[in-house]
Length: 419
Image (cartoon, rainbow, N blue to C red; front, top):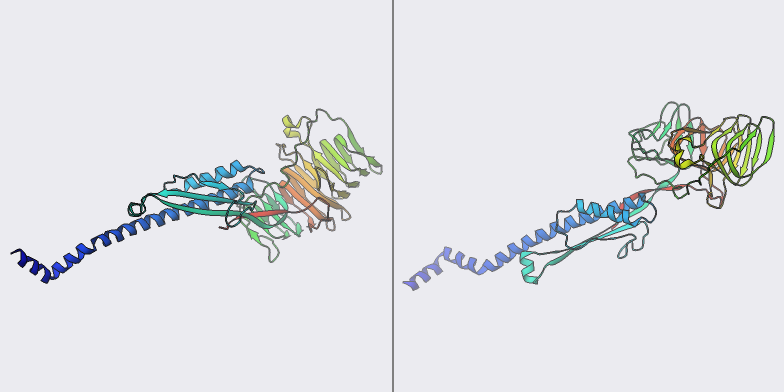
């Protein structure tokens, strides 16, 4: 009876299938287990790579915005984004390096490297390998250049950072950048005309009166204050000295020091050095002012607690100005430095006639700078950094600076995932 059943089974198609199935079962189970492990392995690897990419980009962004050498800010930014892009068990601490220490882009100072690893217990593969599988991912994000700029608005609120209106003609041999997140971060309307490239903003740069070929870059990274490392002005407890030069009068022996008001309506020559001004600076329409190596620090008495009274400057359009910044020292390349502790949004006005020359940086980080300009004014080597830059009149900046002048443009940045 039993032999008959075996013969029947051997002769039966169903029996053949059952026999083959029994023989193939270990292979089928192994294949299914390996497929399941492979899917889990691949998904974990993909999630880890996404987290590494995101962490590297976040770290590079923090590096581009943080104070110099602030490695903790970079580490925390990268770690935060890794956590937000999880979905996998990470039982090995992330490695975050800046600069990268291995592989491609090793030692690149403007790069952030993220290395992730985890030991994943896979049911089938773990049985074969007698332990977990090490899965890893690596990403490197680098800060790269994105144009040369000589005009920067540090405005960070929802308002235009660089308004250009009226009949202003702005001709720059460099780019302009606004950190304002506004939908009108930079506007060029009215009868204005702008020749500059790139024109970039953290917010939007709507179409306007731009020359053909102008590159508009919207939603760019904020550009760091290029003069952020300048020290705050020293505390000045009192200042009663004034400099006043009346019309048709001359003073060619003005030296550095601390002054309350500087009011020039005649001819004045300022010697090289640092001039602290706690009241105001005014150059009248008939003034003739010459400086060579002088820097003007606009501050206030007891500035730390008197932030609403930081000194301002007003240059009349008829003034004849010949001003060159120092070429060495702490304030190398700086013509005007307004105390960054200013809390009031005052307007500073820079003008000059067609025979005027400005060479150096105009730094007004917490207030507005209004550039009215005059056709023919020599501003070939000027950098402008202000909270808000209001262009009016005719302005031309070629941004061509003499060698060793201490003045130069500043580079924009963008973040790229490079590995």
